[in-house]
Length: 448
Image 1 (cartoon, rainbow, N blue to C red):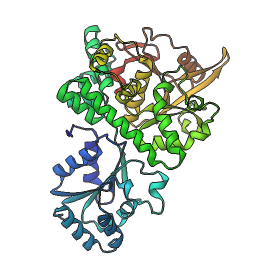
Image 2: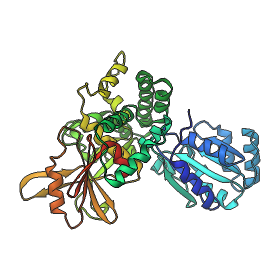
Image 3: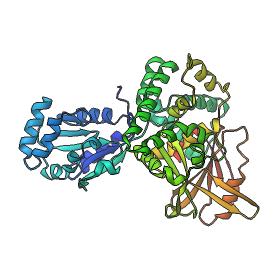
Image 4: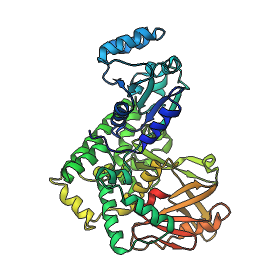
């Protein structure tokens, strides 16, 4: 797989320069977001040699060495160097534990390996904290964790050789200067292309190499099938529930009320019956969970309602593929129609998922708020709530022709004016400011 330029590389360099003598680096993320690729690229460029052990394919004998020689690191490393035909150099080599969740004893050994100090250590994995992957081991405190996500819009442009657009956009955002209709349309087409392809590295690679949406669709469907198959790793009937949830996310997001509703999965069922499966999907990073809060404020995470939440796909390109029927002869025509705005699809669902994806990439916790006001008995809702500079920042997503009608957002700003004095509306039009509301084109979401 192509080694695209990724922002996580800078964080990895910071770890190597400042912390690698005290901590192993643990990179978490969903499968197929490019963890192994970026780690190998980093190892090749920043170290004289590296040794990578993929614990999903490592032999039983190799795994046994970690148990037999946990107190004899000289023998352990001698065996590993012979097995992987790699010479490790003290202070100049890195050892990579790929998919470390597949063999918890190796992760437990990190404490002693870091203390030993002869090499640097990088771990990759998903479901790192899930119960069945940590049972029976002492989780090392000598780990520095960073999250890896699908390519964001800027990384998507980098993959196509465009290293200037985002810098120009940043200038426009900082000065709150509209771009003009012609430039805006050009950028919305680029952003829509990103939304259709998604940010999964293999899908981006297929697009860059072929410029063929049929090729892209084949890759995305392979990833979706992989995720669906992964749910069987979750023991008991909770795995089948996780699979049903994953399959129903497009339908859940297509509703006006996008909150998770178990009755859409099985009539008469309750949220608590699916709670463990939702947690598993969130831990796997296949799904981004957005929680309802009852008390908006800088510490609103303390008022999360565990039984009221929305589920977004980790990648909007995958969401689009999951929404299509699988027996279509050619997807290129469908994608082309979507790109030209000629296909009748739920644009609101896609744009809201895209905003959620970009907020997660910026390490925001996904929160939203349902609240009551005196004017009506109907609950009001704001799509996303962020905390920035000690203030609550509401974000509303509008994909329709009119983005200036946002009654719920207006009522939120009135009711919670002591903690929220500004808001963003993410829409498909050019940048503009109206009082305490900034209307941002979707391609500027990255700057929030």
